[in-house]
Amino acid sequence: PLAALVFDVDGTLADTERDGHRVAFNRAFDEAGLGWHWDVARYGRLLRVTGGKERIRQYLSEDWPDRLREPGIDERIRALHAAKTRHYVAMLETGAIPLRPGVRRLLEEARAGGLRLAIATTTTPENVTALLKATLGGDGIGWFEVIAAGDVVPAKKPAPDIFHRALQALDLPPAACLAFEDSDNGVRAARGAGLPVIVTTNEYTRDQDFTGALVVLDGFGEPGAPATVLAGAAPV
Ligand code: XBP
Ligand code: MG
Image (tube, rainbow, N blue to C red; front, side, top):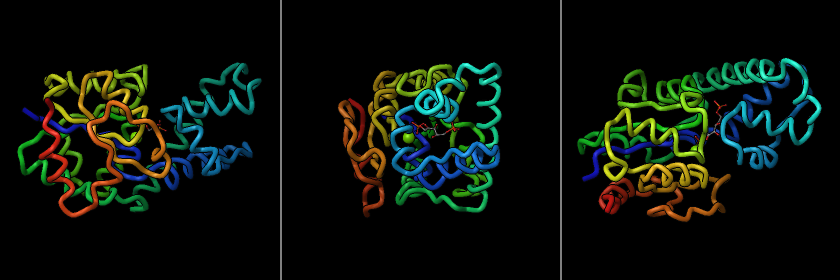
C-alpha cells in the first residue's frame, strides 16, 4: 500500500526557477562585478544541468572555458553560489514565491489520509526550509519527515541517489512511495530508484519526455485534482 509521498521542490512545489533561482544567480553575478547575465531562455538551457554550482560550471564551460582552468576556481564557484543562496533565501523570506496551485491542499489531504511526506531535491537545504517556512508557516517544515537535499549525495538528478537516500531515511521500499516531479531529470531519478512518479509540468519542462511516468498533469490546481491523483496512483 501507498505509505509516503516524495516531493521534488523546484518546479514541483513552487515555480522557483525563472523568477527565483535565476534572479538570485544574476544578483550574485552583479554583486561580484562579473558582468554575466542569464536571461530566461539561456537559463532554460542551463537548467538541463541540475544543481546551482554545477550550473555555474556548465556556463563557464560554454562561455568562459579558460576560467575553469584558473587556480582556485572551485572555491570561487562555491563562494559565488553561497552568495546566490543568500539572495535566493532573502527573496523567499519576502514571500515572493508562492506554492503552486493545489499543492497546499495535496499536502493537507495526504497528511489527513495518514500518508508520510518526504522531499528529494537537488537544491540546497536552506532553500527548502526557507520555502516551506515562507509558504506553510513555521510548522510546515515538520510536515516532512525526511528532507533529502543538495550535496548530501555526490551525484544529483537524473542520478537516483537522492531518492535512495530518502527511501533509506523513510525505511520504505520504493513501491510504497509515490514521487512528484516536474522534469525529465526528476522522472529519471525517481524511476531509477524504482518509485512510481507523477509529473506536474511547468513552462520550462512542458515539452520534455516523461517516459516512465504514471501520469503527466499540468498542475494540481483543478478542483478534485489531489483526490483524483491519490485515488488513481496507488502503486502496482
Ligand atoms: C532543481 C535544481 C536546483 C536549483 C538551484 O532541480 O536544479 O539546482 O535550480 O538549486 P530539481 P541550488 O527540481 O530536479 O531538484 O542553487 O541550491 O543548487
Ligand atoms: Mg524540479
